[in-house]
Amino acid sequence: MEASIIVPFTRPVLGKRTINSLLNQKTSHSFEIILVGKKENMVKISSKKIKKAFCDFSLLPGQARNFGVKEALGKYLLFIDDDCLATKNWLEKNLSILKKTEKIGAVGGRIIGFSRKYFSRCTDYTNFWRQQGDHLRKTTQLYTASLAVKKEAFEKVGGFDEKVKVGEDADFVNRLSQSGYFSFFNPKIVVFHDHQRDTLNKYLNYMFNNGLDTGLYVLKNYRQIKSFFPILKKTYFIFIIPTAFLYTGASLFLNLRSNWKIVIYLPFIFLGYLVYNSGIAVRLIKDF
Image 1 (cartoon, rainbow, N blue to C red):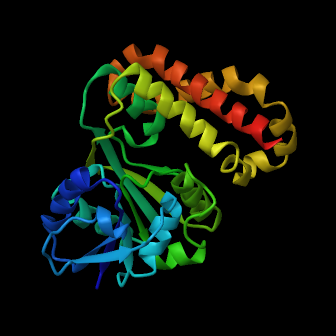
Image 2 (image 1 turned 60 degrees about the vertical axis):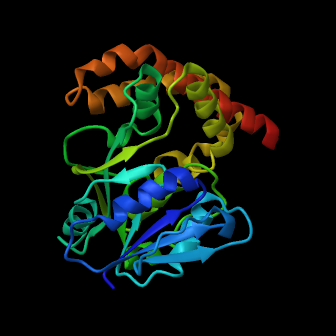
Image 3 (image 1 turned 90 degrees about the vertical axis):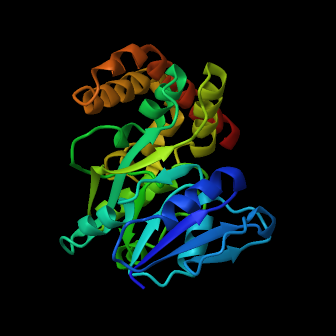
């Protein structure tokens, strides 16, 4: 078995489309699809490629993916969410990058939102901004909406941190980088993401809850942050606005060349980051 595709499975209606997109891959490589979730959430699709890893309780995303990896027979691990559709060459292009050199640990693909509505695009450019552009580049952060990794690299860094509710993918790829692996974003690898956050209310609730759930847990593992993390934790409120500006600028810098229309989303990208950082601040208050 060459590749194992792990899908945390909680949304049967959306997930059925995800499975069909995976079964329709154009590839010469052998692969299996591992669905992780509760038995009552599973769909009935007859295929020898599908393996079901049942759990009787709700798992956090990192826990679900680690659970699936335990059942995986493939040399390469691919992760996709159950609200995404993989294009027909998704598997083939992921593996072609991973096989280039031993130093490449992971590769992420372009995540294109189903909806082109204003606030849906704001979601794309805030929460998935690192995988929106159309230029191949090295990175230290990728998202599991489209992520492929060598199994040996996955095992070397210990998989996903199971304590993290949100941001476990960014944390994982950062740890790959710290272990000496290169990770790449390749825009020719494409998934379509049906996240359905297409109104202002949905968008801002999503950003706030992400901040609330993540806190500073992931950030504390970054080399650049470790030395002054105790100070950052105590004074985070003063960084809410500067950090929102910083991330808005980063998203603009990374994506402007690919799509100049990002400028029309900037006010609400900035607002989204303000709300996200406010969620982090509230989490810090709760933790004290």
